[in-house]
Image (cartoon, rainbow, N blue to C red; front, side, top):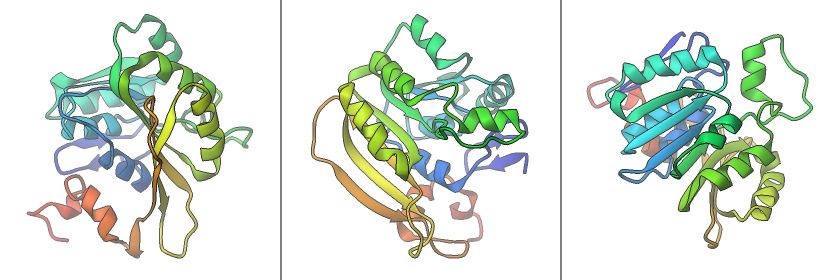
Length: 240
């Protein structure tokens, strides 16, 4: 499917390395966006997280993307959305972007590449989107330290098995893990990915487990609560 339709916007994804998936959409729907936030989306891909942040009330979303193909699609998606004036796509690696950045952000979000030392596919765009070659965890944390406002939040989605390693690196850089939500597909599944929120302000960790599906094609009540304003299937004028 080259275009994924949401209730308020659509996402062209023909040339992007990573397509729309449930984990990413749920991650975006749960984003801790406050009204009038300045948001930075690192590795925006299709731009879906930036678009969801705009729908949630962000005043400005700057979306940085390394690959030209994904950048072009994100730019199209932004211009075709109701929030074209609030969304900016930037074709640049985040390391170079950080060097010349002239502002800090209230919220930094990322669904970063996370595979280390894994076999790669023949699809170069997918490799860039999924592997840490271009954005090691240390770089991501360091850049966030530079670009996040003192009261800001760092919000990301990574595989559960990398949480301990990432959290230790983040803590060494002055970021405290304050919220962790582990996703599993069904009640009988193990968790695969985790949503993490970091802050420079220490606080007790809140953690929980979220099951996405009750049964095949049936979302859990928890998942539906977050997705109700985004997915077409939950639109009031659409059949369930």
